Image (cartoon, rainbow, N blue to C red; front, top):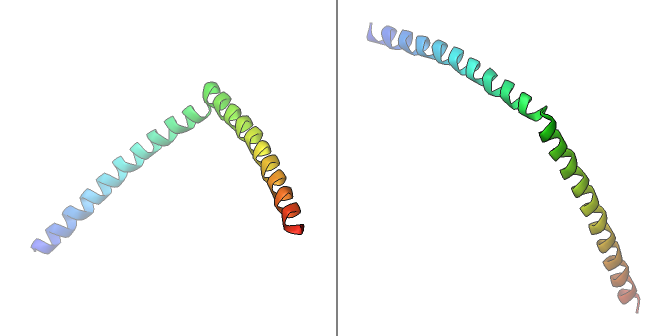
Length: 76
């Protein structure tokens, strides 16, 4: 009998916790989506993307130049 009560209590706790958990999850998800779609956040995202693109181009140039230098040294 105690096992049945324990299983029933566990099941009830799980169901109630899952409902509260799902509701809280949906609240967090909704707020995160709202924040992500905010114009200030999107502006910062685009600015960061532009900065990364610029930096990546510069890094690519430096790496290419160094690779050319090493290739010329290796051929000597």
